[in-house]
Amino acid sequence: MTSAVLSLSALLAASVLAAPAASAAPRTDRPAAAPAGWEKVDGTELARIAADDERTEAPAATGRSASAQADDSGTFALKSVRNGKFTAAEKNYAAPNTGVLRARSAAVTGAWEGFAFEWHEATETYALKSLANNLYVAVERNYTGNAQNILRARSTGVGTWERFTLYYNEDADRWALQSALNGRFVAMENSYTGSLQYALRARSLEVTGAWEQFELFQIGD
Image (cartoon, rainbow, N blue to C red; front, side, top):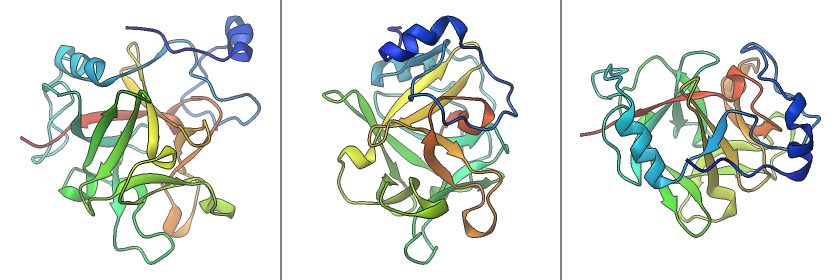
């Protein structure tokens, strides 16, 4: 698999980078770049990794592990490593947070936790389409406060706001998402309170640990 292309600053610092503890809080003092051990995954590689993974245990009766065969584009559920919950699209939330993504489900119960990963060859990125409302996930860069850069299933089309680079760490068997809009990695806001607790937000400059790490499960037939 082709290694992820790091920025010049990341290459210069690569010799001193080390994987942090899983409980470490996301850092904000370096440009966004995948640390050692993380590689970009395209549509073909996603299928290969899913096919090569020998795990077969399903997270729930309606889902199966990513060990099942996947196509270049597939339907998946994202499970946060930080809190062990599956990501759901909150389609019943009131505006302006309608469709916000939140790691809050104990199991894959249906469309709420399902996302179609659509590979785009020209940009080498994925778009995530929620099965709950049939809308694409966007990064809300223009939001303010704790909601800035929140992930929300709200778009009918795909542009830079809706594109993500997918990374995989083979040793840890973990996944990470990086926004094409702001170059930040998606973190699960475990320490938030209220309606945005466990929300997904593109705000980390690197993959520091469990905050930005996810398990990926293929769902459907």
